[in-house]
Length: 161
Image 1 (tube, rainbow, N blue to C red):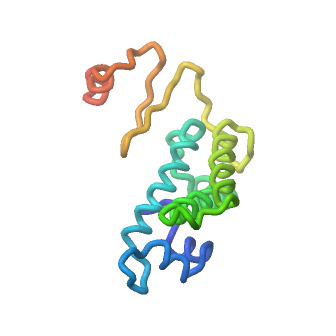
Image 2 (tube, rainbow, N blue to C red):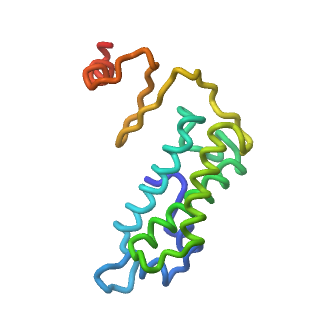
């Protein structure tokens, strides 16, 4: 389930007709929901990966816990990322503006995570020695004093560290 984006939000950004053309590979005259879902999931994961260094366990950003301004800011950034993702399926249609908006969204997300761009919620303080590892659907933290080899991660994930 998407945390920030819906088909309606994406359609309002790119237009209903464009959304069909960007997602549909078979020529049908409807949005390919699977393709759109994949693009949304990738876009949200990309933005959360940028934000996690500053907000960690506070992700996903939501209205109830973080306020409308913070939520709307992240939704806007995710929309820039999903537009790039959708248009990247048709590389000849990607414009310089889309590429710049995508890059700017990631850069602003990084600034937010570092506390350099206020969205109404402070980043979670982290010590300089902490590293964050993000894999498909798991999030783990470790200090730099721990060994970065696979055995350490396996033991830690099994609770034997």
